[in-house]
Image: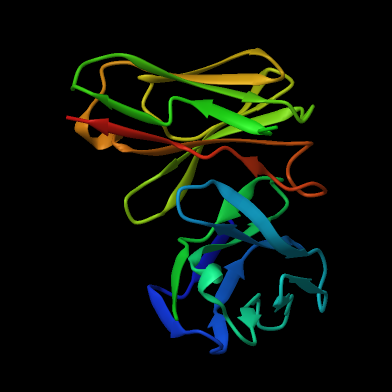
Length: 111
Length: 114
């Protein structure tokens, strides 16, 4: 079956630091890949997505590149802000057409 | 306008009680979901409905019963509540399976069973 593995949190960074949250996946076929973000007290919302190999998704300064050779979709941001503090979920939709989430990574950015 | 709204926001109840959580979406989506998020933020799908028909029913105790009176509503009824049911429950909706258009989530219902 499909699965998503994220780096364990929590991750704590200072403002303007570089962020990487690792995500690898297992799926049959060619899944579409997503990053969702959950701000405190809210539901998840889509941050970015990529639907085929070598695609780069980007939004709000965050980027992730679909790497089929390493089955990865790592999330990066060059300079984080306090307002980026949230839980980040990597996810995929594969052949079963069902969204599978990773376990989430808590990010805290300190001023 | 809230796209996916669920009520109540907080629910505190005793073991053995029966409770319901309501969800409504005004996005015109044809698919609705219930997810359970535990204290470690792990998110697990419970049910998915497409056009009022159940399409995903994960391994969930039959004490949990979803009901979809129409495409815009998916309610969750829980019988004989147990301590382990304490969690945050999220309703979500999408057009189709979430591939072409993303899932839209409600803000969650924090259920505490004492």
